[in-house]
Length: 131
Length: 336
Image (cartoon, rainbow over the protein chains, first blue to last red):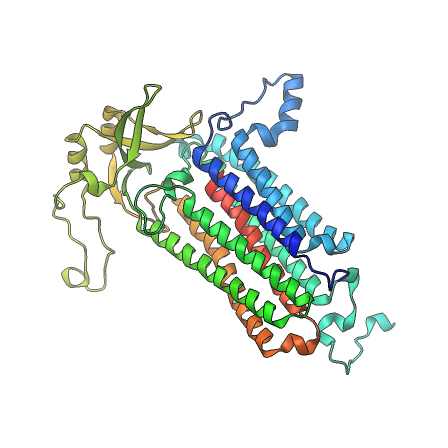
């Protein structure tokens, strides 16, 4: 409540501008789907360094650069909504972390397991799920 | 000892944690944040389940751009436009909400009332848009057929060759190329023409035989499979012969979408659409109702008497959270 009586109008409109621009960029890319971004990345050959590279880059190489860009832009939007609109930037550091870290770690854990599992289902159920 | 005993309080602040403010946040605000964290994890559970299913059916998942193409009052195919409009409405209503909170900090009742009102209007526009989106999705626009082994086939027509010498296609509705009445004499089972306690829902105006005949007599109609070409990120269009072979296996005409079957692709795609956007829409609806309650409290001067507008801040947190969730639903349902 340190900011109780000062106005944040300027900050609000700047954040609104940022969110709008990001949304417009997302929609534009979503409609035209430029060929230079929209292709599946291939994993490296599973040599020693290739496997290390695959492990490190796995969030990137199993999607197209376009989809990866969409996810990054979404996280930027989420950051601005949470920090500026929900006013996390004005809360005490450890209160903010109690909310943000809890959610972030649990969500990353859940998403990793479920996506790996989904890939496994696709390969192991074979003809039942493939076209 | 004192810490373990509930001390009866004569004061009126029983509901705000006895005036204690851990981390400088009031009791109510802190609990709103913890609720939001748990709700965020619930939503991410749904979206992660969507991801799992999509990875499971990775080679046949519907392409969102081909499903959500409609804009009210306009004909033709405009992927993304309408849902972008909905996203923008929600972001704008988030802004008016944060302006209301800001006005509350300055104890400006008139401004809080005005911005709360705009927020509610924005929420109503969003829910209305979502209702329209659901209606379009449920009614469907093209129709397709389903084979006995559960594959879905749509129909496209060739538009000629592009610069690289590849055929370009666009989807056609059954009503565009299937003519006449059902040829098999099948009628809808109503109470008066069969068992009085059995009824069936509306049946398709087309029979399978009729569709196959129309396909055979129309050389510019092709069958679009569910299979995705991973390089081009497009659905594979079958040749005339392959299409005829697949059509021979069909036994169901599908128009629109319900929880059992839909014309867009995998059954579970529509189920996730209904479930995730429905759950989000329910959050928006409850947010609107809470906003309306607070709006009237503001008008009645409740917070003016209380000395602060923190309640507006707390419902604001919930409203921003609804926006935050939509940002992710938008990405994972419509963009990626």
